[in-house]
Length: 491
View (cartoon, rainbow, N blue to C red):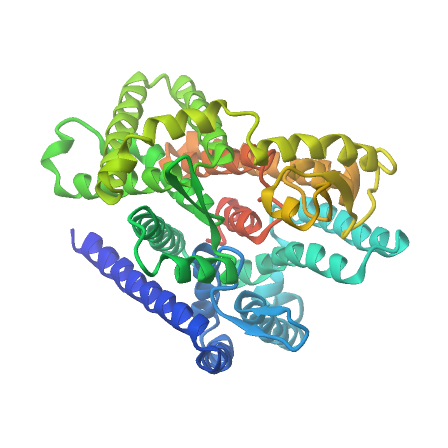
C-alpha cells in the first residue's frame, strides 16, 4: 500500500508539472517574448540536466514525447517563418552530451566500458543494424533522386529518434520508472482530451483562441462532425498503449472479491478514462489497432488454457466502456449526447468522408511511384501528387491537386522511401520483439510482457492507416520495448 501511495504521489506531481507546461505553452502562444525567454532558459536548464543528471533528462525526453505530440508544445519562431521545436532541441542537446560521455568512457576503459558492453551484448543489435543500413540507403537514394533538401531533412529527421536506443541501453531506467512515465503521460493526454472536448462542446468564449493554439503547436486536430466535437491528439497512441497494459493486467486485478479492494476502483477509473479519450479521438486507425490487439489476447488464453482470464478480460472491457461513456457524457452538454451513437456509427461506416476519400485516392499514384524502384526506394523526401478531398486543400486549389512527402498509408510510405528491403528489415525487428515478448510473457506468466505484445500489435495495425512506426511516437515505444525485452537483463 505504501508503494502504491508513493507511485500515486509521483504521478500527481507529474500531472501538476504537465498542467504548468500547458499553461506556459498557452501563455507563450499569446506572448511571443515570454515564449522565447522560456524556450531558451528551459533549453539551458535541460542542458545542465543532461550533463549532471542524464537519467533524469532521459526521462523528461520520454515524457515530452508522450504529452507533446509533434514536439511543438514549446517552440522558437525562426526568421524564415519555420518553427524550431523543443523536442528537436532537447533531443539534440541530450544526444550531444551523451555521445561525449560515451566516447570519453570508451577511451578511458576500452572494451570494458559499461556503455559499450551494453551495446555490443544487445540482443537486437543485428536487426537494428540491418534496419539502420536501409535507412542510410534511403538517405543516399534521396540525394540520387535529387529530392528537395528540406523535404529530405523533415522526412529523415523522424528516424533519428532511433538513436535514443543507445542512451536507453546505457542509462537503464527501470521497468517501474518507465511504467510511471507511461501512465503519467497517458493520464495527462487523456485529461487534456476531456478538457478540450468540454471547451469546444460547450462553445466557451476561449474556444477560438484555444483552437489557434492547438493549430500552432501541432498538438492535434479539433474538428466539428455532425454536431460532435472530435478531439484527436497524435500522442493518444500512448493512451491506447497504456490501456492495453491495464487490459492485460485485468486477469490479475479482477480476481475473486476484487470489489473489496480500493485500488481496483482507481484502476478501473483510469482504464475508463483512457478508453474515453480513445473514443473521443474518433480515430478509426486507433479503433482497428485496439480491436486487433484485444482479439490477439485470446492467443495467451489458449496457450495457458486459462478461461477464467477471458471472463476477467470481458468484464474489464464492459466496466471500462461504461466508465468511458460516463466520462464523455459528464463533459459534453446534453444536446450533444444525442449525437454520440450516431457519430460513432458514422465513423465506422462512412466511406465517403473527405479523409477516407483522400486516403483511397492517394493509393493509385502512390503505388505508381513505388513500382519505379520497389527494392531500395526513392529515398526520404520522395513526393507523390494526387487529388485530395480535404477541404483545407480545396480552399487553396479547386482542382484538389496536392503534392506531399508524408502519407497516411504507413507501410506504403516506408516502401516508397526505403524500399521493400527497409520494410522487411522493420518487420523482422517487430517480429523478433513480438516473439521474445510473447515468450517471456508465457514463461514468467507476466501480464506486463503480454501488454507489451498487445501494444506492439496495436502499433503495427494502426500503422497501416496512420503512420506511427516511422515517427517518434511509434519509434519511442519500439526502442523502449527492445530494451525491456533484452534477455541479458540489462534492465
